[in-house]
Length: 119
Image 1: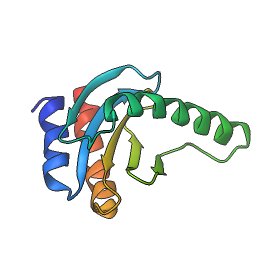
Image 2: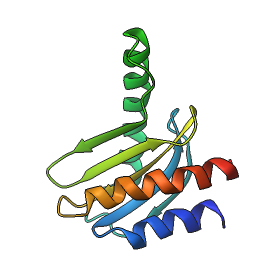
Image 3: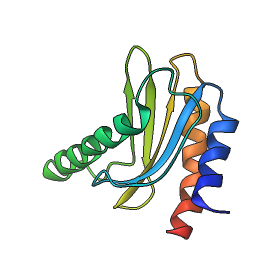
């Protein structure tokens, strides 16, 4: 199964999911599946969010807090949860505020190892 199929499965399996991506922490997209952005440029928003992973990792390392495993961002129109796949790559799910946040976290946790083995 390729990256796209894993990302599509996450979106299909999570109520409210509008996109799922595999991306480098440098902001370079490996693959993204978008179901419905609802007028939001989800793809570019996720690229912008990649810098937050770098910043959070640097802050955690500087203060000896350990590695960053997961990050979530909630706005009025979109909730995004991201999880590191490797130190260089993360995957993220963007969903509506009414979407199933807990299921999104679960799906990231179980799908990340599958993507890691394919990188």
